[in-house]
Each structure stands twice: as structure tokens, then as C-alpha cells.
Length: 170
Image (cartoon, rainbow, N blue to C red):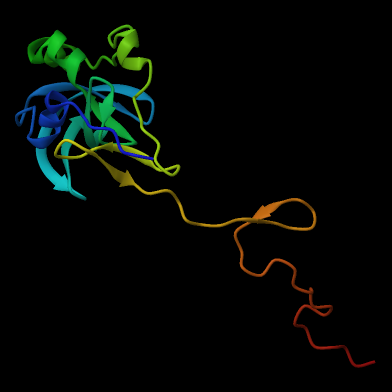
């Protein structure tokens, strides 16, 4: 399957940092929303990442912009962060509030545009193409005779009768 072309506006947001150090942002980490501030930016695995300090500690996150994202686990929500502004988020962070889902618009929560190519998750990284960032787990699994799945290489081994113990002398 041919990889689609990412719009130039979207690709440009992932090339350089969109938030400065100590700027307050809204993030989502593993399904939960947090307020926090950017501690630093760095390139991890060829992708621009942000370290965001929240009340629960620091998180390495990516960016979510117009449905495109560059991290599976956590992202800064670009549009809601810009809509609220850093000052308002700073006030809410100071009051130790957690963002509710109404803070994030339905369009932002509605899901992320992902393009599947050979069952891989793909997301934008740089340039005008979508690159494969998160390769799938290559562990194979086979069914045993009982129908259970396992990833062990040896599935049906005979069990030892004495389990390694010496036979009793009688």
C-alpha cells in the first residue's frame, strides 16, 4: 500500500519545537489528561519529543496536531493548548486541577488519523511523508493442543515423572 502524503502545514509542526521551555500545555498520557509545563525538548528515535512535568512527574510526549500524532503513549494537544493559552493552563495547574474531557473538543478526542501499511502503525515524523515509527511486535504465537496461545518455541515437551528428584531406596 502506498504511503499518503502529509500536508505541508502538518509536517512543519513536527519538524521543530512548537512549545518553549516552561510553557504550560495539555497532555494525554495513556488515556488520562494532565496539565503540565515543558521542561525540555529532545530528539528520541528520530522524533521530536517533549519532556512535560505534571503533578504526577515528568512524561516524554509527542505532539498531536489535526489528528496526526507522533507518539503512541502520550501527546501534547496542540489546538486545545493554544485555545486555552499558557496563562490559563498555568492557573489550572497551580490549582492542581485535572483537565476534564470537555476541555478537549470532541474533534480532538474522536480519534487519530492513522494510516495502516502492512498492519504497522504509522505516524508523521519529518518531511512530507508518513514514516513507520512504531514497528509491530514480531513475537509469534502458536496454539497448543488445548487451544491456548503461547510464544514458546517448544510447545509439547514431555513432563518428567520424578521432577528431578532421586528415587527413594526401599
